[in-house]
Length: 177
Image (cartoon, rainbow, N blue to C red; front, side, top):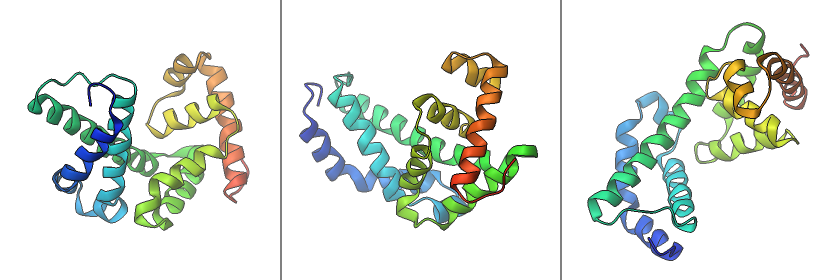
């Protein structure tokens, strides 16, 4: 895999997928297991490992180092999924109707397609910066952090977020601001 052999990464995931899947199930609470299928997260881990291998960034030289990387990728994938749902549960104020719409849409999606549904929601936005802003908002970042990340002032990030929020409400069939 260190040489960029993506087939070796696929064979690794095929052989050790059940072990990784058990770790995922152990990390998810009962409520989160209802929302997230461990196979979906395993698929995310597989894509992320493939990305490491394809980019030539896999530096593990021993089996324990490789497992350490795989488990870090796994933990990050679980955290990313949980973070989105926790964020949508916490949102209050003007953003709460949109958060409720997104949460309902994700809850209604079949378990093995939640990641695909999140991707569909992101694709509603034509502009890559808008997609980054939505992703950062879903991760719980404030407008100042979002603005810094995408190269905008906090006020400009906030104004852009209002436009994104209104567009998503419209596209998802919700009310206007």
